[in-house]
Length: 307
Ligand code: ATP
Image (cartoon, rainbow, N blue to C red; front, side):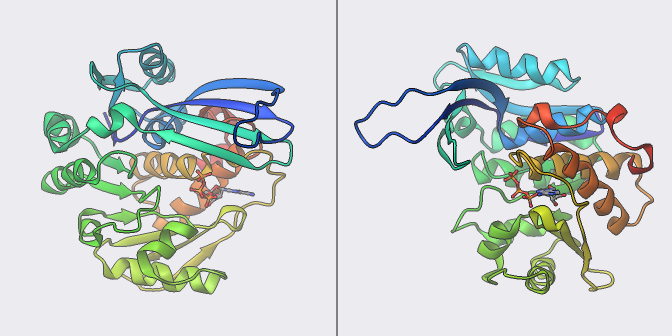
């Protein structure tokens, strides 16, 4: 396995409704969609759809959603041998309501993900040790992500740390185990205290992020692309995203991380700025389609010059 993702699996339950109900009220929705999600699983699927050999380390419940989540990853080639099944917690769910105005309300119950622990990472040590890239996020207990990153460091495996969702009290010393830290604007703001209102602010935040330990910092900026800086040259660069008609940006950040992991494995000699440029373009494909994992492109759907 070239890429190992230690992270979350979440079942998305999405209702589309003309308007949100008030407390105590029931409204009739228009449509319903169920799909597999979770930042960890999304990143694993994004990289696998591009053709990488990916293994997922995660946890689901012994319920109807657990096998569905595992099968969904399996179908795109993700190895799920290290996705364990809990007898005590349910598969995580995200109950999402999307109104006609495009706003959403989300309740996430992290269920079995929160049973992940440092021991879960220890059990996957031999898997992590032989990988080229590890991807971690924060939808499982941070001590589990930290242990996975420490194991990767011990075995000289490159780690991409996507500190999402942003946690206000995250121990920043964790970042010393990341080779690449990759937050979005809000997460970068939480980590650096810099209020991001411009690309220059994002560059300042990226420069601050590398002082916490990672050799590369990337701040994704939605439709504005991303900013990237390396410790070696300290010169932040803005990479613009292609101008596209975005219809659903859900999970775009995970598509970016999965694409970057894929490129680190398949194009290790490219400059990080070029790898980011390609990952930005690949993620911009996903925002032109509905859904999360379903919106991620297969390698056959990507311009070969980006792969
Ligand atoms: P999410 O939380 O929805 O997963 P995010 O906030 O983590 O997303 P973003 O910074 O919004 O991540 O987007 C990640 C990448 O996706 C961007 O760097 C860009 O490549 C692409 N992207 C997002 N929105 C757009 C857009 N409107 N047009 C083109 N590309 C986009």
